[in-house]
Length: 369
Image (tube, rainbow, N blue to C red; front, side, top):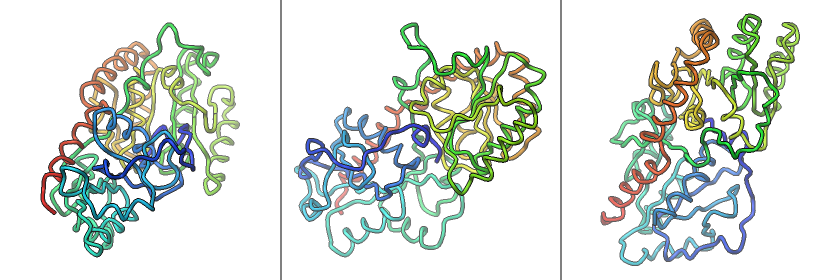
């Protein structure tokens, strides 16, 4: 699941003393057993503070999470034999196989009073091992209808949401954008630079289109991992050969992606394959129109012709033609950008995600193990 967290979220590996909470008061545990930053980790980082603000008694467990989140320690786990006051169990909310497995061990072997919840974002047929683990869950959430279609048991769709205070259009008091000198109209593609994300499709389209549209500039923000260095270098070489090195810019990782969203006239998410993918929502929340492939949950986020456009994944011609529509009519991009902000506010605010999960937690907490 690609998110802006993969571009700009600063993660901490330690736990500040003040962030450790009393497990006796915790009703929901959100384990994170993958230290390396991922879309799942970014979801936890953004969602937990909202859940806590809404009164949910939730804490995280595991490495790679910032110290401002409420943590419990591994040494606290024996306390799980005693449910919190007024409850018959706790909820163990897993998002990966490595988090489902210890939940099963604690519930079924150690006989701890736990209810197991799994969130699935994958859009592929699960392995036999994953299917087995999922079958043992007490409840399952799918982040999109497409993700749910790969599950073999009942599930509830809970879309991810975005923080509308963090991701918002530019305001008069905002400092200068880091891209203010990049031309009148900026088109961007954010996330790790690799084939799966379709970065090559984006660059190829710009190489073909930009010579005819001098007011537009393209920007790629995101990390090139060592295993994708050849891929990234080839893209830069293609840009150099086209003579567009001053109009197709590779920025690498940036410290804060939010001002870049605000500066864009159009955001592009050309993934060939995706889990959920938050970047189109972050762009729309920032008042920016979006062209995206139909990978992941993108087609469930975008209202065709109102907040942007969706094209078949991997279809270069469809992507290029969709971009040309906005290059020829920047006013359309502005109009759809404002419509996108309202669409996200109604359907994809992070508070809605927190509320939907709270209902599931409450159902599990009220059920006798």
